[in-house]
Each structure stands twice: as C-alpha cells, then as structure tokens.
Length: 226
Image 1 (cartoon, rainbow, N blue to C red):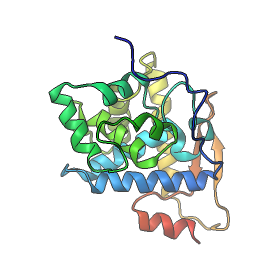
Image 2: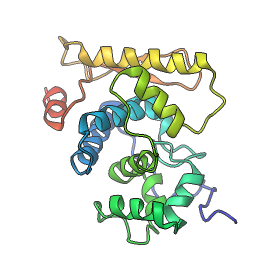
Image 3: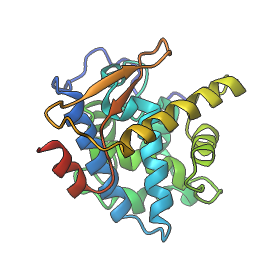
Image 4: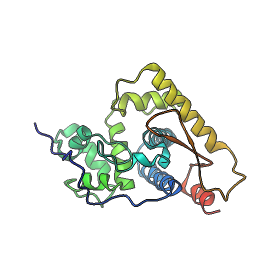
C-alpha cells in the first residue's frame, strides 16, 4: 500500500523560526512536563526520564539546530514516515485506541489526525512529544528503570530506526547521555551565560547543553530567567 505520508517535504508551509538553543530546550522541557502530567501511567518518574533521554538522543535537547526541519523525518523528535503513516491511517483497533486516547488530550490535533503531519513538520512541541510517547506506549514492554543503560537500551529497541548501530555506537550514546546528565547536575555560577555548547565527536553535529537543569517547568523558568 502506498504510504499516505508525503515524503516530499521541500515545500514546507511552516518553517521553525530561528531561536536560540536555550529557547528550544525550554520548549522541549515544557512539552515533556505536559505529557508526563497528563499521562495515565503511575510511573511518571520513569516516563519523564525516558522522554528526556529521547529528547537528548534525538535532538540533543534542543542544542542541535540541525535536528529541526530535517527533510528525511518528521519533527525534532524524529518521527519516521512509517510510524507517522500508522498514526494517520492505521485502523487496527488495538493500536488505534491508544492513538485516540493520547491525541484526545491535545485538541489542536484534528480528530482524524489529518493535520498531524503538518504539526510535526512545524515542530509543534506537544504534538511531537505526544507522538514520541505513543511510539513507546504501543510497546509491550514496561517503562524502563531510570538508569542510563536501561533508558538508552529501551530507546534503541523501541524508538530508534537505525538498527545498524553497533555495541560501540550504543555505548557512545550512553556516554554522551551521562555527560549531559552530569552537566544538568552542575550548579551554574555563570548565569549570564545563556548556553554553552560542547560538540561531540559525532559527525552528525550533536551538542551537550551545559548548565541546563531540566526537571519541572518552574526550575526551568527559574534557571533561564536569571
């Protein structure tokens, strides 16, 4: 069956405005907070860790500008065309109920999800984070523990489309995420410095946002408004 997703994204109707990486990270954190708070799971801490890890692994938590407006996937959460086609067209009762239950939380998405693709490609934060959550929600496996090894392994098994990763690739991702978490836990003594990007060894251009504390929305606002 021919995919209903138009893979020609060269004529995008909406382009993400150029914004500082610090603003992108705040948008991501706010969307993650919203998704976690509105989720039915009782394991919200596990869900938050998984969503934050995914945001880092897919777009360096907003620090990698190249992750926005990609022409080979959808949104900065890297929703691949195959899964997007499922979200838009699948009528399997098992999964469609999951899709409906989640998308009903956000009334900006049409009931038939006809505008979902455009919203993703406009980098709508809630629509993108919800789509990422749904990709995990249809997994038969429970949410992972919050340690780095567990969340990265779970991301690779259930989310990442590149199944050519070697063990060394996965270990590198884990090391990068550990460094990111370390940077979040560091107390910032230079609050006038909005953001400090440390480039990784990857050719794709991922970055570690240094000094970003994450957590709940209040702590984010407190950090970035000082």
